[in-house]
Image 1: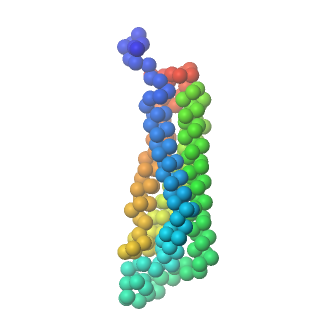
Image 2: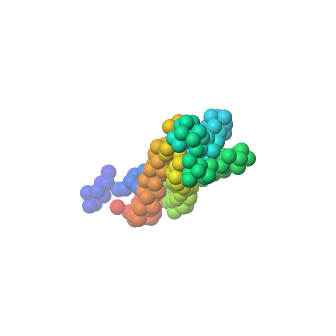
Image 3: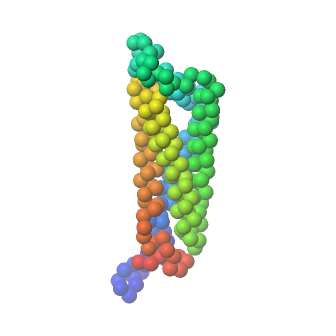
Amino acid sequence: MSTASGHRPVTRWSGLPLVATVFTGMNALILTLIAFGNITDWDTNWDFVRNVMGMQYTNFGQDAGIGLDPDVMWHAVALEPLQVIGYIGIIVAETVAAIVLIVATVKWLRAFRGDTFQSARNWSTAGLLLIVVIFGIGFLAVGGEWFQMWRSVSANGMEPALRYLTVASFALVFVNLPSPRWNTAKPGELPS
């Protein structure tokens, strides 16, 4: 079907809205699986967080056999209650991000039936920013730099954190691109 100008009409199921829906849904799925894994496999993930916060596996720590470096090892959090609070905080943040992104995905899908895209964009932005905070600030800055996770030979989550941060950041930029396609001309069609 073509218009008088020879262009096919652009439906709500094309372009930016469709891709934003897929990106949002993908990030919702990733965060849901991460949170679910942390909740259902507490011991494995707890070991990781405990060892990162305690700086047990840094290459200048106890496992390296070269003694502790007091210039850096004072960053370690050795008290288990504080480590538990940190781990629960990570799980709560991941769960909240997953829920926000699930809501955003539903809002995107509803927008294809005639609702506005703005609410979906707002929810996506909030959920994707949470991912940036969790993995950019939490894992890369705090875990990677403060607790020196990048030096670890066996407890280094820098690469996965960067992966999640990259995927979320790309989606965040995409969802917030300015475009007339976000405006509704009439239910079912977008301006070309």
